[in-house]
Structures are given as structure tokens and as C-alpha cells.
Image 1 (spheres, rainbow, N blue to C red):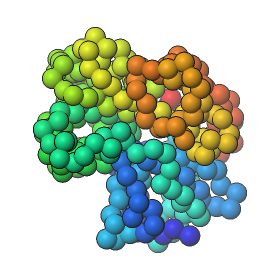
Image 2: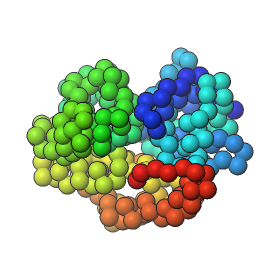
Image 3: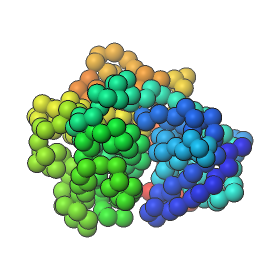
Image 4: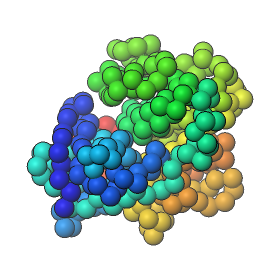
Length: 281
């Protein structure tokens, strides 16, 4: 059992949880994820590692209520336990292979859509601590969906916020900010809704900017056994959970990935309906 030692509500539907998991905290790296389960018959939920504390032996996850299982997790309290937390899983971010002395002065642009701020944070933090220049764009439909603004300020050089309705930061979408910032970076990393990553990749191509995207939203089982997260990358079949979750954005077949996201939509809607839950997609 994995005890929840801290819980904060970030928005009406998004929660931050710190969980006791010493072995995971000792080996976690930016870009990796966990499989979380609550209850003996609970669904396996892949969640990106948002942060980790090796001294306290804890890991942080950020969960958005989007269905029955995530609703159960978010309604646990401090002192309650998750039945299972497995990880760290997936491959760490590519920059983990770069010698730390070579990261100093490198220029990174992160584009976070909604809950994408959670997986962006540990990457930005790692690079910032090693002397890289880190700029972050956070985009969301409205101000109530902007999360981790204060934490992000501490790990980046410049933070840009935009909302579709203009309720916080600039009015517009993340790609408009990308175009304005231009090609002054060594690498762009986009994490968020699939459609956002598709258009961020198209914008990066116009700017001739290398881009990495995370396909964590495709994952179901998290171990490669279910096959739900398979996607075409550079013309080859890959599994987001074991071959990723991060890939070169130019190589990803986003149209196929978008179709795959609807694979279990009917079952999700039925389960939500039976539980009396309703969410906007």
C-alpha cells in the first residue's frame, strides 16, 4: 500500500498528490510515468511523474478527474493509500543522455497544454538546475485550468501563459506564442492534448525547430501488453508506453493517434453515465 502524505486541489477537477514510494523516488527520471491503482479491482491508470523527493521517499502525481477511476483517486485523502503504484516506467527524456556540462546554455522551449504542465515541470526543473535556458508556454481553455504557475516560475527563464478565452495571460492558442518567439531554441518539447501537439509540431516545422512530443495520453495498460497505445512513428509501429512516451514530433502519425484516442470512448461514456459523472472532452 502507498500512503498519500499530501494533497492539494489545483482546480475544480485537478488534484496534486504526494505519495510514499521510496524505491520509485530513488530511481525516477524526467519523462517517466507510473501505473496507479486504487482498490483490488481498480483500473490501471498511467500517470506521469510530476516530481520526486529522494530524501523523503515520495513521488508527486497530478490527476485530472476524467472518469470513474480518476474520480476515485482524487477523492482519496491524506492518510489513505493507493493499492498499487508501479514504476518508474517508460524511457526517460532524451536530454538525460546528454552530459550535464553540455546542457549549460542550451535553449529549450516547453509547450504545456492543460495538465501537460505536470510532466513538463520535472523536465524544466532538471534542465534549469543544470544551467539551461528554459522558456515555458502554458496554454488552456480558461484561467481555471492553468496549473503549477508558481512552481513553473521557479524553474524557467520566461513563463508565457495563454488562454482560449483570454481570461488569463494572452488570448489565443499556444502556436501563436510559438510563432512570436521564433526559432531561437535548440529544442522544443510539447506535452498536452493530442490535437495541440499536432499543431505545435506543424508550427515547429515552419520555424525549422526540432520538437519532441509525449504520447502519454494514449496509454492504457502501460506495459505494452494491451496494444492500445500503438502508433506509427517514422512508418514503424511503436508502443507509447515501452518505446516512449516521448518521440520526435515529425515522425508521429498524429491522425492515427487521434483516431486511437477514441477507441474506448463508448465504454468511458457508459461508465461515467452509470457513476453519474459528466465531463467535457
